[in-house]
Image 1 (cartoon, rainbow, N blue to C red):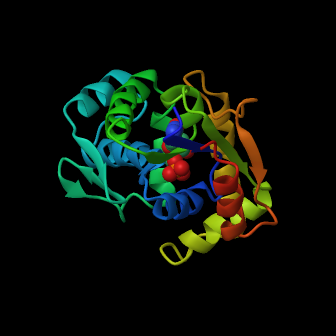
Image 2: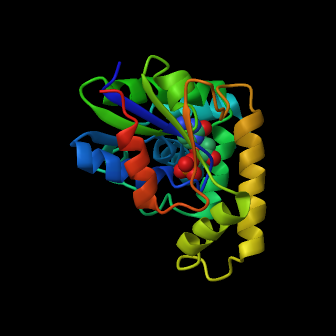
Image 3: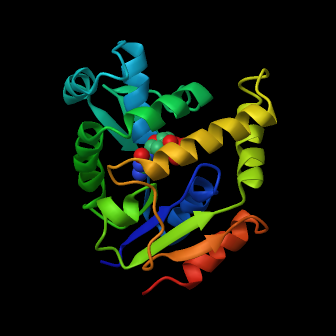
Length: 215
Ligand code: DC
């Protein structure tokens, strides 16, 4: 399968921006799978249900419609694209994403959205669990300090109370949880081309990926 490009990596690795650039350049669709987990977390918080109660979270999501279209995320038809970009929802999404029932629910949505055409899909398990059959798999990373700097630059406008130290702590906690969970953890495999973006521009990373695509 060559028309699905998977890009995995931790928070702040640059995978979102790079994926959007590559998709636009190749005329592919783009799917941000983290946005779907954030949308699930948004619903858990809005209802609200206890985020530690897997059965309650599963039941809630079974009756929730989550979709992604043209870079926007919808929960039951409501556009939540902006609201899900907070540190709080980031933390909650990492928590609920460790639940197998949540991953199963979102697995079906992700496969369904992608099977129709050519797509760049990015997240934590897109090359290992969602499209293991892809022949174009990438893993993006950067030093934790650089990733925290990038996240902090995004978050500080929305949350003036945030500090770089707090952002670094949040990232460390999320890295740990996302990589150590039992259900499809964030993982680099031998089939993935590895790119360390610490000292690279977004443009350089996008170029490197496009050049190494199997036609
Ligand atoms: O990439 P992001 O920060 O928007 O992702 C939010 C959370 O969603 C992340 O901490 C873990 C979870 N996630 C996941 O478990 N699997 C994915 N494919 C994408 C995100």
